Image 1 (cartoon, rainbow, N blue to C red):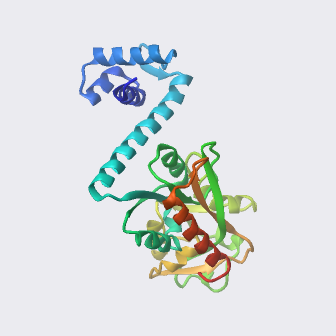
Image 2: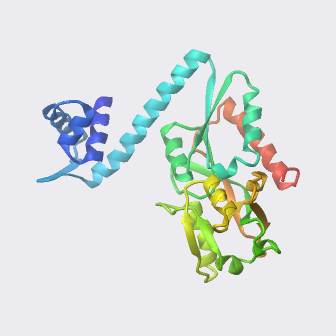
Image 3: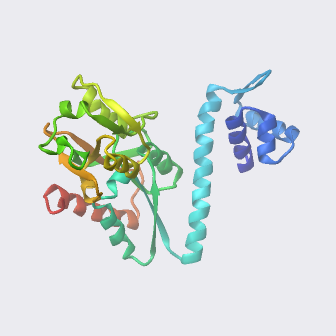
Length: 300
């Protein structure tokens, strides 16, 4: 099996049409058809169901598509890292993160790692689900997220639980005292969109649903900065982790919640079963210290 066969398969699986796939790959259709047939013969399994108007992945094809993407991502990441190492003679350490964890101590960890002149630190903004896929593909070495993802190849450690707070338009009646979840439910909410699998939107909206409260979602946004801009525009409130308070924004007041013990986790994800190299051991040591500082109140 050659890498080009994997690339051919992925494009065909995405297009589900040999003609369009051939055009996208800039090759003629007959050799593409032969390559897919050879791949299926080598695999000993049908990857596609041929239909009059196109193709459909078999169950085996769906599984192989996921694995093929990971293999190609791993090859790409390895080639890129090899080039960087050759050019700079540095060890590459890649970190995935969700934006809301980058307003706390993560920048301190990056700063301390960068003191090692033989290290090149690369940051990737990724959702937690994307971090798991990136870990398996070798794109990142460690990830920091908010939700639990069950995957046999990845281990997740809870670093600490972080209080949720409300970002509220400055001057709103909600800023007179810590608002309750019931009070918040009566106001327009700026929410983050739900997607497949566990996510931050499920965590925050679930807080209302489990209390039997309905919410009025005024707007869904994809990123924290946009959410805070809409709050500053008096379009509604949003719930954010406590460390976002460090992001000062004109027109936005941050308020603790009246309800007790409303928190979201901060989770570190790593590849399971890997013996940590020197860089990972250094990162873990720094991380343990920063988490201890957080838990003992030496860092807000």
